[in-house]
Image: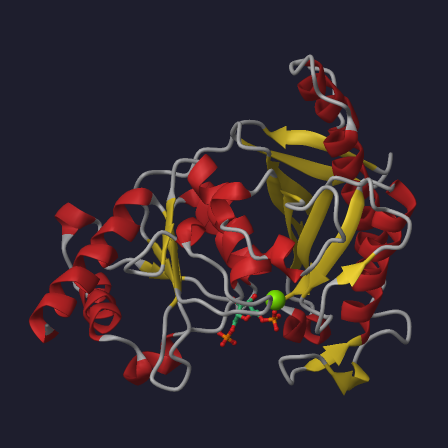
Length: 336
Ligand code: AHM
Ligand code: MG
């Protein structure tokens, strides 16, 4: 029987491949693994304890915060505070960046969504954590919001944790994507999905189709196309959408597919946040061989303007994303 490789062993092995590595990023990834295990524990007993439901106040986007959102946010902040490699964080749950005291020498900043898809908590559907790690820009001065407004191409590492039928941590440092499944009996994330590659093509499309009438023409035409019957192109495709980006994307990463949260006439920038939802997922999917775009521009090349900025996103199997991009181009030319 092949021996188990734990997340920590894997991180240390990778660090050893880089003779000048200081171990700071390794320690930071290790801290994220610890926070993820604590959140896993709470998510799993969420139905048992009085933790379900709203915390009674709203976050910066005017959405109601769930108790578990607050709990998860605090776990990550505590893990970074204890670790010492992070000088500041930005999170979906906090209006402004949080600068840690006495961490001026720390190299890294982290953007994260502590519990994405939180409207699914009360109904026992998979939820996730998303994180994105950058080097601070200003080593000698105080860290500021500017340090967070870096393009996705500058990410040092990114990943997500999915709290599903099992809990998994998937991450990249720009050398491929690896997935680790939590074995609760030993409390360790174990390498279960080495070098994940997203199939070039798939037959799953994931989108909130209830908004069909509000979508751009390119998306509407694609949605009509996927439903047609045509053996040679494997159509009709399968619709799969549970409203948890991490879970919807994780499935498509493994099986092949496209996830779309486009602009709508009501929300011209879409819904999902560039810094802590789209960029990290784009980094992972590109590292697995897929693509992520707004329809017109590569997600990771967008110059961020503010912390909670939203962008439209089409992400997944390369050929599927390229087909929708071609439709965007076609309809832009028709209008232009
Ligand atoms: P959240 O960050 O408030 O949880 O919202 C993000 C979630 C994503 O996980 C998911 O893809 C999307 O919202 C679903 O939105 P909709 O209900 O509009 O389809
Ligand atoms: Mg979110």
